[in-house]
Every structure is written in C-alpha cells, then in structure tokens.
Image (cartoon, rainbow, N blue to C red):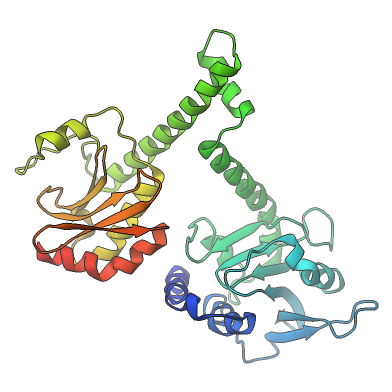
Length: 360
C-alpha cells in the first residue's frame, strides 16, 4: 500500500472515531500508534525501535517522560509528544520536546494531537529545537507537497541529513504560503498599497485604500479561480472544456434563469466551492466515471452535475452565505438543504450522494 493510501485510511478512521476519543491516552492508541506503525513503518511493539514513555533525567527534573522515542541502531532519532485530539498545538505544549531535544541525539521532534502533526528540527541553532515547525501535516486536509517529505521519515527511507537539508526550504515555503493565504483572504494595507499604486494614478486616500482592499481581495480570488479552472480543464481527458461560467453545448440546455446566472459577471467560483466539488467527485467516483462529474457555477449556488446535464443534479453547494448548506436530491429531483459548518461534513452525506448519482 502506498503511503498516501495509508494516510487516507488513517484519515477516514479519524473522521469515524474522533468524537469518541476523550483522553490523550486514547488518542495515542487510536491514532498516533497507527501513524508510527502503519505510515512511518516502525514496530511499536519493539522497544528497540519505539520506546514509549521515554525517560531522560534533565538537571533537577527527574523521571520526566516523553510519549515516544524512535530509535535506529540504538540511537534516538525522533521524539514524539502527544496531546488529546482536538487540542491546539502551540509552542507552550512542546516544553518537554525542547528539553529532551537538547540532551539527546535526536534531530527530529514531532508534536501531535493525532490529527495534526508538526515536525521540528534545529535549523536556527545547533542542537536546539526550532520554535517553528519545518513541516505540518493535517490528516483531515492532506497537503500533497508534504507526502514526499514524510517518506524520508519512514523506517525504510530514513535519511536524517536529507531531511534536515530540505527542512530549511520547507519551513520558509510553509510560512510564505500561510502569509499568502492570510493576505488573499484579508489583505493588509501594505499588500493593498502595493497593487493600488500600480493601477491607480490618483492619491491613495483612506477612502481609496478601503475600496482597493475589497478590489484586491476579489482580484486575487478570481485569479486563483482562473488558475484552478485552467488546471481542471487540462486534466479533463486532455481535452479543452468550456469555462464553467459559460453554457456547455449539450442536448439539455439550462433554463433561461440559469443562463442569465451563468453569464453574470458577478459569479465568482471560490476555492471552497472547488474543494467541495473535488470531495463530491471523490465520493461518487465509486459509482460513475470521474470524468462524468462536472461543476457548473451560478450566482445563487454551485451545482455538481452528472454528464454536465442540468437534469442530472448530484448536489448543490450553497456557500455564498454565512451558513453553508449542501443540497441533496431525491429520486424525484427534489432538493433538501442540509446545514454544514465545514467541508469535511460533506463526507457525512456520502451514501446519499452515491444514491442520487445511482438514480441516473
């Protein structure tokens, strides 16, 4: 089984069992040990590979334990500190990791709550754990760029020098991505001024800055959407498909109302809608060929159709409001809207989505 399949399997387990986990110990048994064993490939029942409750006296602190130490050739390579699933992971929770990192040969430390894994090394000062991770992995939102780096930590491929050498780039790329995400959703004055000064010839008064703050946010959203749509179109059978904001030439034309909506300049396909589309596509591809599952955005909702046919709606995503809804269709094509608070909740409707697709 490929590592991505192992990660997805553990991800599904977390979705099914997370609400039942009430303690740190239960988190370790249910999620962390399977991650160490199945994903990283270390034998959790062999103390020569994985030592639980690892003790290393430090100064006046005696008998202090860290949750797991992973060894190779008798040398400690990785230290792991665990928290209960759902608990936030911040630097205040890593005090033991800091102390143990300094007095062992470990070059890698991991702080986790069973869902999110933060990986640290000693880039800023030798033998002193950095305050910021060089890699983060969220099992409910797996970043494909993190997977190749994770492979380097597995038992069969473990190469500490390669990991540390790549860690510097990973750390700063990760931080830049976070900063970009922040600026794209809520641009600050400096970011807005950078673009406004290049397209606006007048004085940048506060009123103008307020205006360009919203314009910058919209421009970034549309730019990202264009890039995503181009990649999606290229991936569809290698054929160029019409834009999702235009009417496809099919035997079943949309209604006049929908035609108006599709050609409306106010339509903005958001990243959340595209991510929701991919989740639905991943769910129903077990019923039909993935190439038959098409998205069509309108001003009032984001539709997901079979065969790009308006008479074969799989579901609708109503994300252009404070409370998000997913619209599920029955055999009579009557839509029922269900409130959701996150994209992950779409998985709760997997059976209904497959049933609806099966109607066609």
